[in-house]
Figure 1: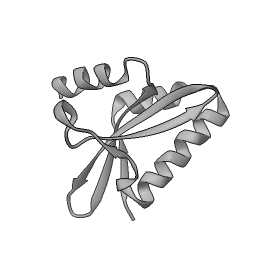
Figure 2: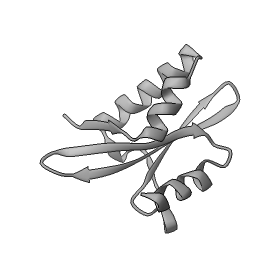
Figure 3: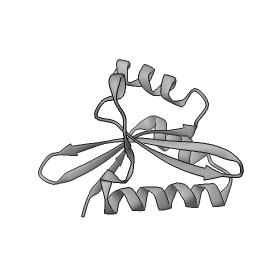
Figure 4: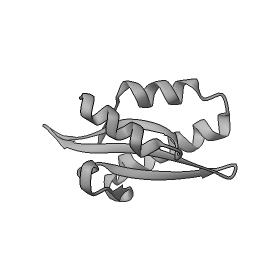
Length: 98
C-alpha cells in the first residue's frame, strides 16, 4: 500500500479545519491519492513533478499539492493544502525554501 506523508504546511492547514465536511473531503482526497497517485493533475513549469488535486466545497475551490517519491516503496508526500486563492504562489515560495 502507498505510504502517505504530510509536510508541515499541509498538516497545519488540515489540522486547523473546523468544518467536518471539508475535513472529510480532504480525507477522501488523500484516500483516492493513496489508491492511485496519478489521479491528480500533473503540473508543469516551475512545479514540474508536483500534482494538484482539486476539491470543490461550498462554492470554494480547495487544492491539495503532492509529489510521488519512489523509495523502497511508493511514498506520496502531501506538500500543501489550502484554498485556490494564491495557492500556487505560496507553493512555489515553499518549494524554493526546501
